[in-house]
Figure 1 (cartoon, helix red, strand yellow):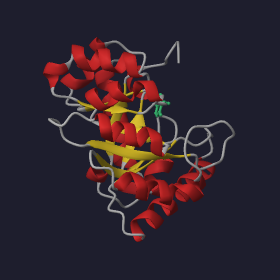
Figure 2 (cartoon, protein in one colour):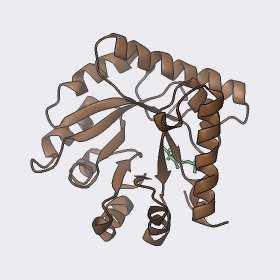
Figure 3 (spheres, helix red, strand yellow):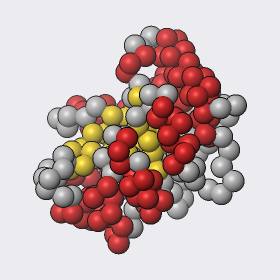
Figure 4 (cartoon, protein in one colour):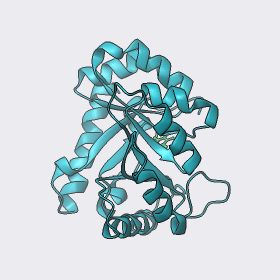
Length: 228
Ligand SMILES: *Cc1c(COP(=O)(O)O)cnc(C)c1O
């Protein structure tokens, strides 16, 4: 299968899921997760009109961003960020989905170059409490979101989550609905949010049913990853 035909298949899945959830299909954005794949793969997807790309590994992402700077793409950091990598992230990415500590958010805000737009940020939530998993605990998400929202060089956009993988639709739906409920609670508290980043290749239908506004899809577009 080619990247072009895979992209069409994923777009059709998104459209179908929106249709059966009674949502307009332009309410869900597709983020193509290009981690471990070379710039040529990104170019193939970009030639089909895909604009948003996600990277997990900072160094790898920064290299691709530099190689493809002339293409005008939008780059999302979706992987764990250590303190010593915040400067690179702040300088090169447009979005960060994986903020789960105030200290990282403060560094990103301080290091965001003044000549570019504020960095778009989502708070990563460990919604199902998996031990050792990245993400803030759900009961701490509101306080962290309020602290991040006032940082001058960040623009808080919403929440991101990576639940335990399951091949059962109902199980995925139930977990995704917990994240949606938390997102609604943050909105009700007065935060202005527009992004619920949840759903991947295997569970995007359940995520869209629960209210996802952005699905992060890697293997269904680019193929299986040998090293990840
Ligand atoms: C790798 C990754 C994805 C994409 O996963 P697929 O199963 O390949 O679609 C999405 N989100 C995050 C945070 C990832 O690390």
